[in-house]
Length: 381
Image 1: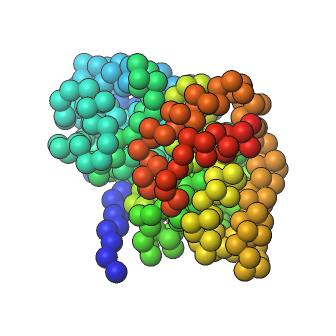
Image 2 (image 1 turned 90 degrees about the horizontal axis):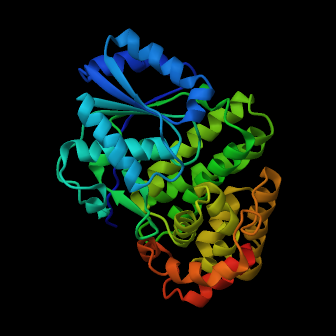
């Protein structure tokens, strides 16, 4: 048995943990930080709470609140220019994966030359980055504890990732209170993203005993609590468990990587701007069925993690698990691809582009064909 497993971030978890922010800022010796968040975080009043804590640390700050869903190379360049002009020595990213991924990308360019596209791939970032404190307001992407950032190259019309240990946030404040104002639709989409992370990392061909442990535990927690969190945003027990499950799952997929579901979702987001979690959720049940042929025992273990009892017939077991996932997506309000605006005429183009996705290398079932992907897209349509 031989494998590598890395957990890098310092984590502070619990309701009220945002009060620890001044201590962290002072601990890093930061004098001027950039606060990165989107307008939703501002509207929810969360950014104001963060500013109050920063002011207690006596550090100066500048604000970049132009975060967009699925950050592009252009928005990275704009935020980087603002950070360099201001002369910041650290970052505080508050929000979902888009805010934290943008902060990671900007942070790379503060200490490394060139453009962010130069660092696409694995282990391309040579110089250490500035301190980055991540404060998630969603329970889904796990970006706060991972070594990955996902970006859109608008010229090539593709979503790509930068994967490097230097990207991982220095510290994380995971305060479930900050997820309380998250709308039901966002709760559903981000929660399904986390469930996808658990499933794909568990069956990944890079999985190890440690990633498998975290994937199964994360899935168990997420599946049990997502409907309650969507139904009642003030159910803080469910909110807390969703944030915990998301972090646990992040430990898995940041080490084991992902697969075909994400390959399809990246392509959908690049071409049509679909929310990442919604794209994942729409195709997840059908990719599970497709992959089960190559990993029937693992599919049965995943089914057990959500409370199902496998019968020992691989075909029946995969259908039972897939149907449970389809039922969950209906309960939490996930739309089909057609309901998300995809047209049938787009499917062949999408299937072709999915074949170029690097993440397919980690999928348990290899020798994927364009026809296979098209069949999955048609089922999800």
